[in-house]
Length: 219
View 1: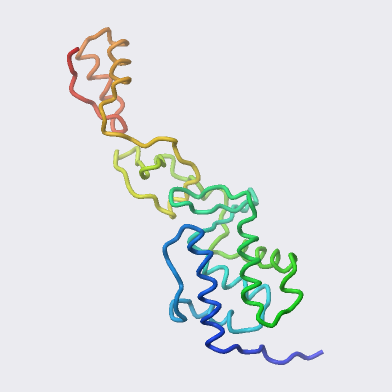
View 2: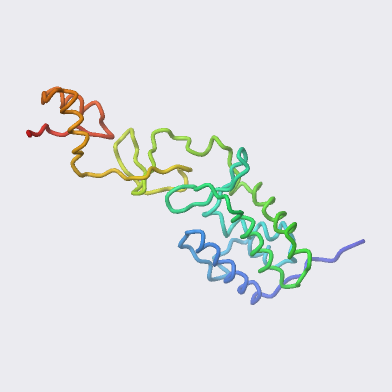
């Protein structure tokens, strides 16, 4: 059986879909909104303007969620960016986004596009997309980066930088570094050095750069 060309959709319809597709991005924690046709890459605009297929919906999915999702092929699990780290996602969020995308692009009312199998197909395409797919070894690959709620601490330099997606960190400490006086640590040093100020200063220096030496204090 020979099929005809894909049915083209009007620019107005494409604009409506772009407005709808912007919502998952905001929910995923990004500040980027897609409010105009020009803000979508050519591939997505083309996908949205053609007949609904798993592949065309997956193309749109790939652009819309590229900042919010990653897929670990070793663990067969999705990770979602929460603003601090790539958190393990265990609630089928990617499937839900695929389902929404299928529903929103299905202006023709095709029964097949409303089935779970269709959304699973969209998700399967997305897993293989180079935007999302990563090896397990690509996550947490830098042992010198300590991720904290306040930012990422570089143990080599003692410097803190803002959380970055490209660091691919999946873990985060419960507390952040503080410039407050480390009372408990200083008490510990005083105990193990029997109050000797010189020994205490030497021991403190050994923790640099994460715990830079402080001048010995009396009392």
